[in-house]
Length: 280
Image (cartoon, rainbow, N blue to C red):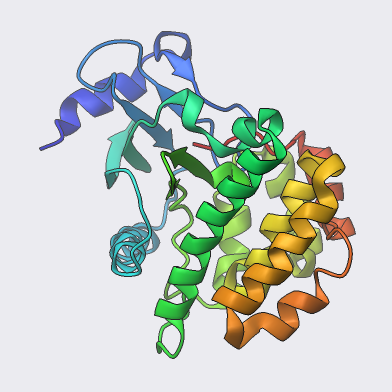
């Protein structure tokens, strides 16, 4: 049982005393891992609070439902809890997650691995993607998945997924577009984003498309290791046909050449200083 009083005290402390900041480049927050104490084996993710209590309560319910959905889809995950804590008179969403070893994060492993090692990691991540979408097929609720390389760790031969925010379940396309602005940790995004709401809303499209999640995985790998791009494309085509047959035609169309990020998203990333580091 999580000691919420101790967790609140931890978050209230000066950022310099929190411990190791796992990533400073996340879109929604900068997760940290305490260096000592009862949460030393956890990663803490603190998000922006809202003045809308009903919206926060709905967020909590949706997050619980999303974690349950991922587990139902046999997506390997570390233990994950969601809490709404009172921080300086404001309710703040906080995720507490079992920490994964730093040397298990997929992105740095992809950067240093051999061709065969990186292809094995792609296969592990691909199997998680395929399992999720086969589970989600035909379900009534709107549910998505963001299986980017930076959101996986590799434990043995298994890919472990750890990104549960925002919870990609129940929210409409328009609601999710607004959430991308409401909860952005980047003040510039909150100021400039509303002027480009349609483009911001479009960021989520890949997360709700089975073929695009696979194409996105391959595209990220090609950008990380361009010397293996043709190997990754070949792997992606074969994987789409063998493991994601219902969506194979669309995936194959996106794998004719190394996939590129949409221009508006690369523009946002440069504007905000996001370079795709692990967001654990």
